Amino acid sequence: MTAYTEQTHQDVSITQNMVLKDMIVGNVTVHPGARLELFGNVLGDLYVEADSEVVLYGILKGDAHNNGGQLRVEGVIKGNIHRNAGHTILSSQAVVGTTF
Image (cartoon, rainbow, N blue to C red):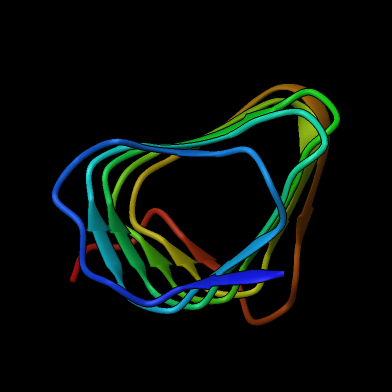
């Protein structure tokens, strides 16, 4: 699994298994077959495509769009969750729709 540890100011496409430990200012799309473990911050929207998996431990300051993958939220989503398809799990520690 690749670790992504650099701050980025652009949209990011995840096409392989990855661990994100820093900040992305832009949208993140996780494509089919990829898995993302998000410990950092995303200042934008998150798109979970069909047959992909995301475990969010960090902070998403935007909306999460589950378009057919698996989304597990252990951290914070400041925006909304759009459950268009797939499977979404909210842990007991998850916080959704908060203002900072």
